[in-house]
Length: 78
Image 1 (cartoon, one colour):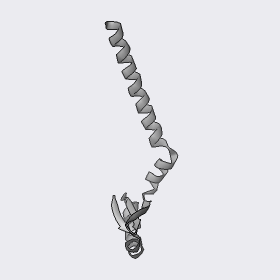
Image 2: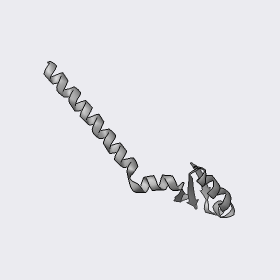
Image 3: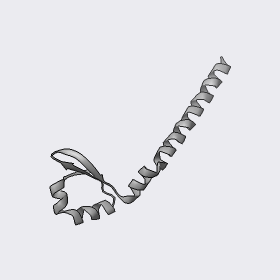
């Protein structure tokens, strides 16, 4: 991720948009405080759709299930 202030963004908007289209992410700051992020459309759609979160939740459920199975196996072996 790259950082850019609002003035630089205004002066280089075309170049920055091309970089974002190519996959770069920018944190936009005003007076040294982050105010926005420029992200590729595909990353935005993924974040808004929640698909990334759904995959993480499914992965956590799989891990929890495996741990539960291993724990019950250990208890029955004792």
